[in-house]
Amino acid sequence: MHVSALSVTDFRSWPQADLSLGPGVTALVGPNGQGKTNLVEAIGYVATLSSHRVASDSALVRAGAGRAIIRLKAIKGERSTTVELEINPGKANRARVNRAPARRARDVLGILRTVAFAPEDLALVKGDPDGRRRFLDELAVQVSPRMAGVLADHERVLRQRGALLKSAAAARRGRHQPDLRTLDVWDARLAELGAQVLAMRIALTRALAPHVAEAYAQVSDAPGEAVLGYRSTIEPETAGVPHEGASVPELTELLIAGMAQQRDKEIDRGVTLVGPHRDDLVLELGALPAKGYASHGESWSFALALRLASYTLLTHGVDQDSDLPGMAGWDEGSEPVLILDDVFAELDSRRRTRLADVVARAEQVIVTAAVSEDVPDRLVGARLSVVDGRIDAA
Image (cartoon, rainbow, N blue to C red):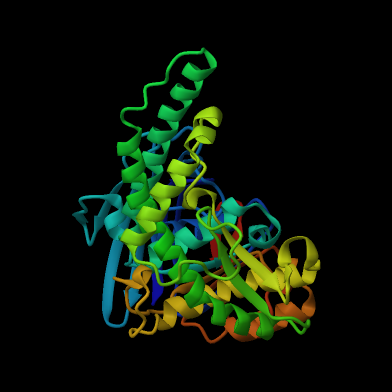
């Protein structure tokens, strides 16, 4: 799979930009602040309908413009697909596929797959759980596009239940009896959706684990094995991957029971305390948690291993004999486009060389760098200069 053409209008810093691409390596080289990252961000947005840099679509629209447009042509084998996305802050985004309007913007998911490496990836290891949850959820959307709807519905119901809990908390503080007649209904719906998210994350964690261990060994010569686990609010003290064989209905019941157990605390605090929105992907190096114990170099190796494992999983798919509930409906493997956004400047020479050796065999690699020297010699291919709003052959 590769991208052959990209066009953006009023996207980030670009009033207009057009980029022709081909298989192999393409390096976008230019000083910081010239818009290189914005171009690869647009490619990644088509694959996931999210940005690896910001949580809100409003930041993607150029200042003063009312909307942004991304047009992209993706090639998979002999098949060519053109995607157009119109980003409308505060309103529904719109999409066209091969010039025909799509019913929903998320109908474009699955046409293109990407794996992006960026300096922000260090936060996957050193940062808070929300970044690791987002890592799993964005990968889930690429593995199984239907999860985009599940995640959106889960977020919506979580907000609605949270509003009810806040009202109940305010009533209790005012010494009034809170109205909880609809809370059971919200509990059931949130648990149903949360169980689907939880099942997918558990399946992803198990599927990624061996690839992460292998990739860590490839990019780091440090001792210790990279190990993945999953910590859930319905079994917070369990190591490894809890509830690995549980069905979605079984997980639903566990979530309902957990919310019932925590109901008084939830009303007092006005927040939902049980569910995948409070879970964490556990990263361990040897027998110790990577966060707080891994060195800077080891943390970078772990972050790279997570992205390389994602690439392997998307490329090769999963064992079709697996019976984990969260793997139902997973798409077959297809090689994603690899995006390396200014990541080589963050790495020491050893990790830079090892990462380049691993990714060089991919069908398409798009690299951004401030200077040509940041692009390893191993990554031979096209060089484009991005300076002063122009994209030219270097």
